[in-house]
Length: 315
Image 1 (cartoon, rainbow, N blue to C red):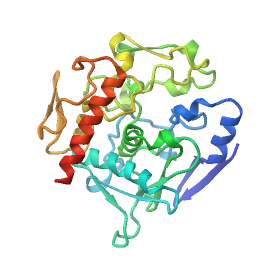
Image 2: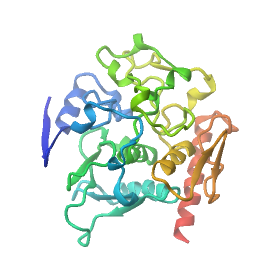
Image 3: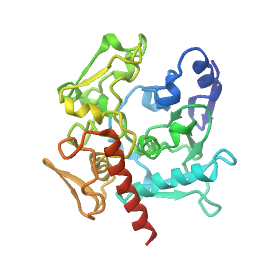
Image 4: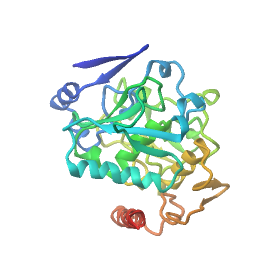
């Protein structure tokens, strides 16, 4: 087991390296190839905790200091770690977010002021990992996208939403009204990945529980036999949505827009999701709205929506 310890000013961050991931894979964790956000050595499978977060975890960042200043997330790539195609996939996921939120994503350049905190994309190991929220360290916060499964549209957005301040949906304090955690099916010693946030330490903006969130665990996450469910939704129709990594849901975007006080975009109003720009109004993962429960058809529907967004951005 190998770790890399990095010191950022007063912060010390423990980062799992590719050596750790490769070792785990070689001794019986091939599920990481297919589910790279379920790493054994990270909090909830893909979260790199900063020291100030360990004692007080929140579902959404309610401390404004942990939101990206000026609604702007800077980012860059580590030289020679990504192919042109891989960078295109990351940029496509970012562009999709740009069209649905007021948060700005700015590539770091020679003209970027010094001392700026930014997300530094890394292509190491076989897993995905990110920090949660903004941390004023003045250098790059590594986001790991190692392996093919980490380069998909929805998985990239999953990690970006972590960076913007989101935790996993299944840890919300109200989750017991919507899902049943099968504790006996969880890998022994990994129960902490399912710990529910205390309601006094949580701000999730009054949004409905979202089975189709790109931040939700799959039903078999951290299952000790990889088959038995660890999360069972009370609404059985929602099973197909849990753990989807195709694209953010409308509730994800509504939550993000409220968190960053965006003046336009998608918002949650009672039982309705309203898209003021009419860009993706009919393309969201609300199981009540789907005409099909076929996962292949669902993926085609969303892929077409992404294609339409890309065409719009080119005009």
